[in-house]
Length: 611
Image (cartoon, rainbow, N blue to C red; front, side):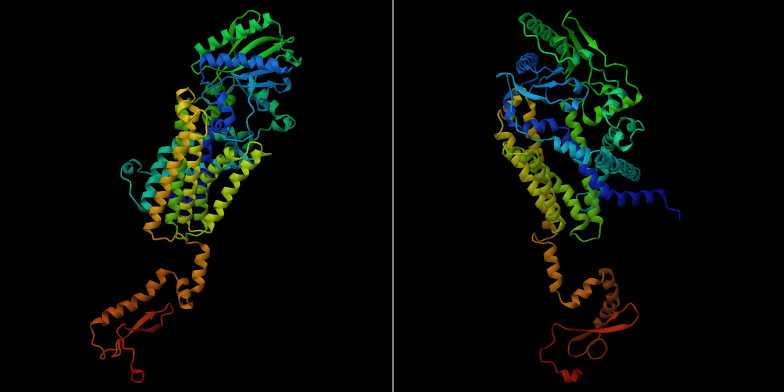
């Protein structure tokens, strides 16, 4: 059977688009928020706010010198000392003392924040912050490689659905400024225009994510040879420069005054050169040892702009012996595969992005999620199924329940006691409890009413987050903005925007409910009880589709209209007692006479004469 290509694409887009629309909204919404996971984690730890520093040249030099003295005071005979300088995204300086065996794997580096003014470590609450939402976006949190495979396979199928929808829309520009104001046509045009405008960003995010998930989705044949230590394969394949053999000896900082003055002088000169060379300034300082003394100081760029090298930029190295400052290459030049990998990592994670670029990346991901949500609502409007449970309930669970669960999780990061044991587990439990409760609520309530109520809940939770960000932080958002700390101001603005969006969507659902005269107490239990209380005749009529009942009554209505002009008593259609006889055609062809009592029939009719 030959099927036209456009019809086949339309059926594929409509049938597969529902499930993939749920999946795509989940992934894109969490991915948009994950772009600010460091900012959310900083906001969730108010104990560190007083130690935040503006990313200026003086503060970076002060943080590097204080971190060096703090590492000397701790007396750790470690292989590498890393000091993270304050940046726009991470304004709190931090220190990591790394063992030689962990020098190649940055996942094992543990950075601890410190206060420059007091010269002590900052004890922050144990929280997962925005990292939980990021892990949920990457591997569905806790599923590991299996979760990455599921996300990658779903992204691959979603790419096919997006491209099929693009080829179905042949006249996008003609309806761009002529959108309908209401009805299913409005959602159709909004979905088409939104998806067409955000298609390049969606394809960019999906393709770069597939490249990053390729090791789990399409594992290499070399992995069986690295079962015990897969990080060794990553180090060898990407040409990461290995640490010198001198690091095997546990180095101890030389405490004599002359050496200390020389280290501070080399460090200050290195940071001055880095500030002039890099637009974003230095972000990481590493002290390397040889024979129990610092042999060189290395500075890394805070935000790189090179896509082909994981956006990490170049490195500046100051030698302790000669005092010369030189650039250090990252080993051999990366190949085609490594360049593609680094470019996808930089694009998908926004490693290269400044604050403005990162904001537009997040906005584009949110627009993609909004276009997918419009498609889900369009499917709901064009579907003839009931509004209770089923696909409409899952749509409500995703579109309204997921934002409410995210807001509940972020509230738990601030409202739970800092001294609770296994605090991150409780924060994650709040997310899953709220999300599960929203699913049950959506299945046992009318879809439109439950969506309104969950949007109200999400708006209230976002409003509480906004209040927390404005009134329960020191310094406040406006004061922090003038002090050169835009992180708190941006977080408060994000929560305020989420509140306004939730209020607007809830208002639109309320208007829709009032327009359709839906009772707010409507739900599945009430619908079942109403059906049980109806007479048997109405139950039988309800089981017959409305179109079939109208077709059966059409001959009877025509006969009634034809007999409207006859005199009562002379025809067979009416009698003197005010009764009308209608004929209803059954599907088997037999005619059945139905007698309807007229409204003006007298109560004391002579039944014998009628008989």
